[in-house]
Image (cartoon, rainbow, N blue to C red; front, side):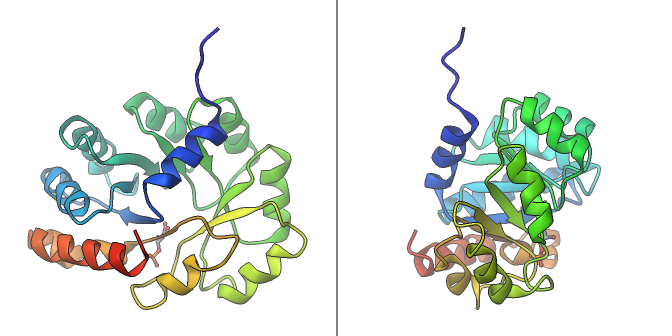
Length: 216
Ligand code: 3PG
């Protein structure tokens, strides 16, 4: 018998680290560590490293090894096998843009918190039936934006969301101010061109500005 904290307790501890989660796609493995260091130096420590590129998982491992103050989650988890790879890599949490029954079943049995992606009431009900009351709301803007999120609060007062998809520096604060929003995420914090050019100072400064703006 271990004293492993429950997934809900783990998730609450993670969200206490910060309310903004950059959604990171790594084209080159060597960018992983300097990027994570820049974000962490700017006060953004909760990271979603996506499995969209071959460098993703290895980049996440490198960050976990070399940037101890970063808290690494794996995103774009589409299958039970992706989830297993995330857990094996040592990720602290995992996220998906959606949720199949197979993925929800695997996530229920996993040791780390998982945020399924939902964009409709029925998808949320499927996730909640499996015990997942905190979900990614994706694609947030295209799926109805703030109006849809506010509408979901009516029938689902216990549900909590991390909206992603169309969140920007301009609208992040408004999303985060919603009572059912626990964090916001997106790619705006890590522009592809800045990563490609190694503009770590610019990324650090945007992270710092965002944390200040969001009250972090
Ligand atoms: C995600 O997976 O959360 C999205 O790709 C992020 O969307 P954005 O690029 O509009 O921020």
